[in-house]
Image 1: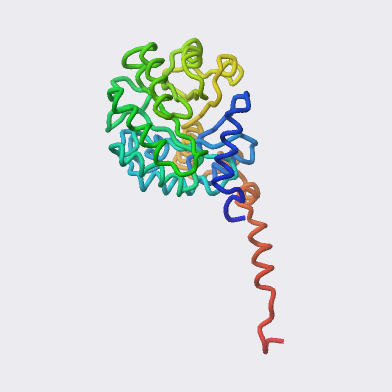
Image 2: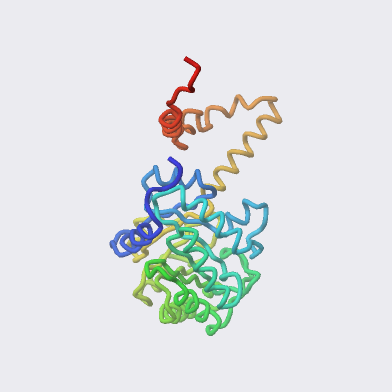
Amino acid sequence: MLYAKTTPEQKRLKLRELLASGTIQQFPGAFNPLSARLIDEKGFAGVYISGAVLANDLGLPDIGLTTLTEVATRAGQIARMTDLPCIVDADTGFGEPMNVARTVQELENAGLAGCHIEDQFNPKRCGHLDGKNVVDLDTATKRIRAAADARRDPNFLIMARTDIRAVEGLQAAKDRAKALVEAGADAIFPEAMKDLEEFQAIRDAVDVPILANMTEFGKSDLFTVDQLQAVGVNMVIYPVTLLRSAMGAAERTLDSIKADGTQEAQVGSMLTRARLYDLVDYEAYNRFDTGVFNFRIPGTD
């Protein structure tokens, strides 16, 4: 009932244990707090919170228009509804190194288990679009150093995302990944890898956990967890999958209502009332109310 029973500190420790387990961990992307609870119920290891999803949910493109306040607030709402560790996309850190430092502390306060900070220019672009630009090595490492220095909980995960593969090639991605680890990154997110061999190359270049982004309609094929584990990937995210699925279903239902004058044809594919009540733990709230309001008002007997 209400929020998660696990503290942020416990979630951060759990994330560290998961990444050290030697088994690849799947983190589906939540687009709201209720979807995070569903991810939890289905037995996944953790929850990913995509910057693109947060922007799109506001009706905005993923080009750096969201603010730290918007991201921290929504990510916190999602994180508090699940006992799973949640990692959030912090884009470029929302400014210069001092802004990056504040970003990390705000995300700690919001109950996140970790974040990733990228090396694109601001305004940024979606990682699987062409025409990206990346900052120079000094700027990229300053962002990560500021993030690592600012955290107060040593288990809060600082992940460095690099988009340089699409701009300068694989060797540049390997070199930058090494430099970002030296700057303090606990994990590496190599964006838009072309194939499994490229993931293997990053794995061989660094000795920290690495992440694979299995987003639909992107630069990478949709590899299975077994394929990714075989090349040493520690974590795989599905950032926009649930949002795309939900919005696809919503569009089909609206089309049905428009065409038929009723939603009847789509009811069979909907989440039932009983399942929705189960997901929000309706019965627990009912029991709580009964336990509190179990008195008699004097003079009414």
